[in-house]
Length: 156
Image (cartoon, rainbow, N blue to C red):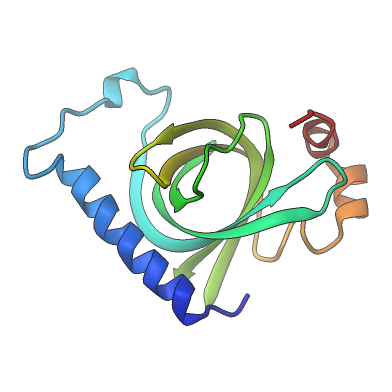
């Protein structure tokens, strides 16, 4: 997906916000590792979220920044303007290195407000790949991934 100047500016602003969150506004933040089921790895990488609606089409694409990643989940900070409902299907395109992208698909596990317009979105990952998983062929994705088809049937 080509990245325009608005996306770059949004990602820069989100990265600055993320750095503020990670440092606890200049104070060390208390570790929550003992509360987690698996360890998280901090990964500050640009990404694009594709959010899906009930008919399977991507309703919005939103630039974001990956905050952290674990075996079964990804946390993203994005300027969505409003909360994203739990269980909504999503695909993430992550810039993992120059010219290299990783794709992850799953459902929204949580969404919490960070600022008035920005939210941290936790995604329960169901599939990972080197190419698009859902957006490339929605009909095929619905037939291959029962979780995706089920998530599309949840009303807004």
